[in-house]
Length: 249
Ligand code: NAD
Image (cartoon, rainbow, N blue to C red; front, side, top):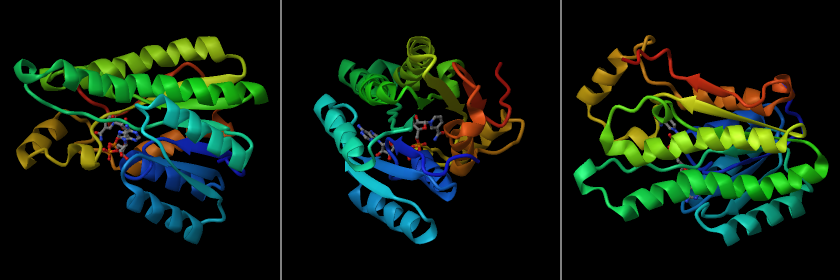
């Protein structure tokens, strides 16, 4: 994969899909900017692992993607250190499943501010730098929930992920021909985001997947790594589902 010496900023890289994406791109020789919010220990452990296993440069940057000033500082630090950012992976995200009747405006706003507005803001400041280089790639992590929603408990999450698809198309339109913008929509993936699902819930959801299992985070990360690489230069304005072939009724 053509990733050697590319600099990749991954939001929410301290665990799950973001962590695995950092691993996959570093394996291919990319430099990785590891963004984290609260989990400094996990982020430091990831940095140590990448340095130990691969010939790669890393930078740890704390920033809450809900906070515009912290995003600006993260981008400035990244540019100061690496001179440019070749690829942005908007991975950070949260969900908070609660009964529709109990959901508050605050619950809804927190999800939107993190998943959707955060993706917008990080893209805004990173693309400004990419446009100076007349080159770049943005990969947004959406979800199959953006298109196929079954559970009103996650309606705020689903709406935020649908918004990310809209954002992807608008950004592709606006930033072409210099920057490509694509989205990856994972289906169920084995990460901490799903740690509270019961065995019965998992079995019920697996039944709807043609491959009869949840994805491993690296199976999503490898697709993001491909979209980050020069091997995917002609892929633009696309949403790629990575869901094991789900049956959507
Ligand atoms: P995860 O909970 O393990 O990871 C989410 C990461 O985002 C964490 O590192 C967390 O610290 C970070 N984050 C959250 N809020 C942040 C903030 N304000 N600022 C900076 N970082 C923040 O879950 P995951 O499954 O690895 O999720 C990664 C992405 O994949 C998310 O966007 C999620 O919505 C999406 N996704 C996950 C699944 C799944 O089944 N796990 C399915 C579809 C899409």
